[in-house]
Length: 239
Image (cartoon, rainbow, N blue to C red; front, side):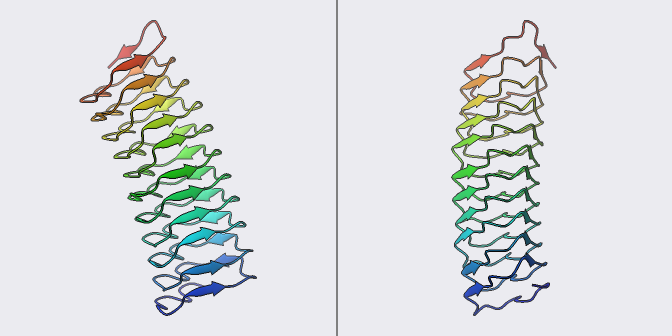
């Protein structure tokens, strides 16, 4: 389906298109679509469903790529995409009704992709390796288990309502990564450095388990509520 094909089609309620494999930019932009049935769809282009405020649950079993702003500002409530590999920047930004996301094959979450999804409670992404800036900014996820995460850019978890964070393969905590979040328990066994302002204003922070840390930069825990730090290194450099 080509660009802007159903742009501003406010009366459209259902898109049942069993042979469609690709949606180009703005295909359903700002339309009234509520239900989408596209079993062979593999690629969702930029802004394809952006502004579709009546969307609900989305289950797309063949989708492998979601481009920038694909669902931004839409009414989507849950997302199930088991074959998805990459989520583009701003893809689900401002989806304020979104509560549950399952992306069991996704490798990369680009910047801002879930920013301001203030009701996002559950994210399942066991294969996620990289996370861009502001990805979970202001999200509600209580627990984030990311067993294969190796890189998380600055500000990725700012203002989240997260309580527990586990990332056993992560080796670096970037600048302001958790700034002003509600995180209370952090388990990062392979991290060796904690960037500046990483946990600044994390007033609920209680426990940090990071046995390999050897460098903690300026203001890393400034005005946080940290109660216990487990660092096994004999010499930890504080800058």
